[in-house]
Image 1 (tube, rainbow, N blue to C red):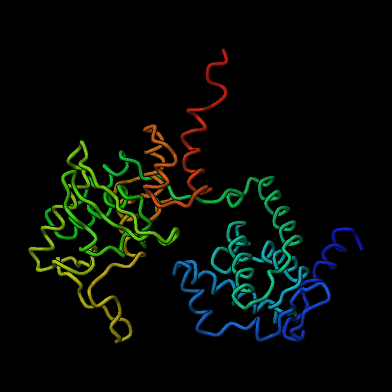
Image 2 (tube, helix red, strand yellow; image 1 turned 60 degrees about the vertical axis):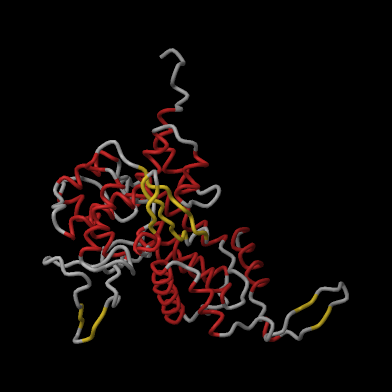
Length: 370
């Protein structure tokens, strides 16, 4: 047995102790060993823990955990608590098994998410996190191989940044005489001005918007940092991309249609009917008040980018990334950008967005005499 395999075996032996089989007692060193009851989480508490995670992440984690459970059953392995060897074997399997939809093995970012899903699953059940040393080594080797092969999956996909020129192009084809057009313009411009995630954007109510001397104040709940942040919406220099003018026009149209309370961004059909009934299989679906889903808001952004002939990977996150990139290019302080967009302190994602600007502006090649 090689040294790495021996280390994995030792780590696995240490973590597979089943807490439910140990009596609650104080050792001679004064260390408390918990009983199974101490390690127990009620279904209600598990549900509360899961609710703290974004819906899209929770859905993806659920699929990852089910896939891991199914694989363990086929391989005759224990899913929870998982050994270090099980985690390493599972990750290796993910790197070589084609997925049905793409006919290619999972991308490294997908495997990273799956590993996180299984690790957090252990925590939610009161178990120690599985040792990921071997699994991480397998994943690193996979990343190296993909990079050497110049595979597309070697680099994590990022949403294309929606910068002001792209936003102008996206909105140029919007019919702002219609309620749907007014809504789409307000959604794009407010999403950019607040650096909102689409889930935060569609969660806004009309009561979250107040008129101010500078334009509007919009209060968003930033789930990642668990704070309500007041965002000042200022007049733009170009009427076509001014978020204040777009929001004012949309609010007036909603009021004219009798909407003065409830969700800010609502479903609108081709006849400008608000909250048209939706059914699936004879069953009514959708928010009764007509609130848009995050998926519907993202689809608006993607559809407008495609209609404008813009290339790239467009998604609901394009507005948020575009805000960070444009603000940094304009010379704004990273701390102020983070506060305005509700990024957590030290966010690696935000740092990556700003690196797009800083790597050129602050390049050590500048001024060295080449």
